[in-house]
Length: 114
Length: 111
Picture 1 (cartoon, one colour):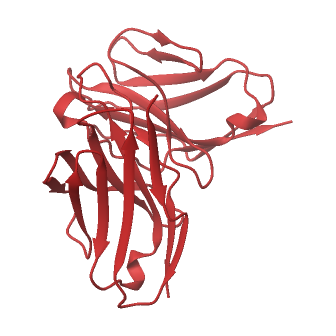
Picture 2 (cartoon, rainbow over the protein chains, first blue to last red):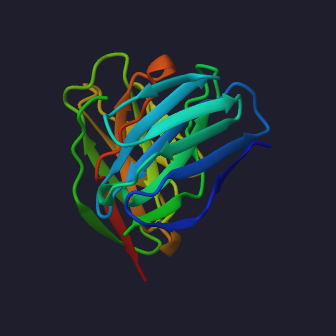
């Protein structure tokens, strides 16, 4: 069966520090991968998605970047965090077949930038 | 994604059916209606999706109007664990599967 791992669960970082959040998927090949962010009291915002190794599409301009160094690994990064980067970050995956119309989410990382 | 409109919040008694409405008057012919829910501090969970016909699975039923301008998600026997934010999303799927989650409806199931 397929599983998605996301870590860490919580993170407190000072303004200006770097960020690296990692997400890995097991039990599937060539998944579509997604990074979402949810600010307090708001809806989920799609940040990045990837359809293959090295292929990253950015949905909104921001202080963050994403990379996909391996088929089932998706990394969210920042060189210098801002206060506005605080939020709940979620990684998700989806199978590549057109009939697979479900997004599966990880457990999320609660990031607090102070 | 098609623009969708949902009530901000709803209440339902435990054991009763919960009927969650969604308006999507501008949905295009090739866009599906997807429903997800998010329990506090967790990632969203897929519930059901449909195009034209009504759909049913082990979690819920989806009723789509004939003109496809609105739909209703039905939880037949709501439990306390169904308390969550429910999102209705219109999307064409396939290579365009980049779902945009709005604010959804907070469903509170009361004992």
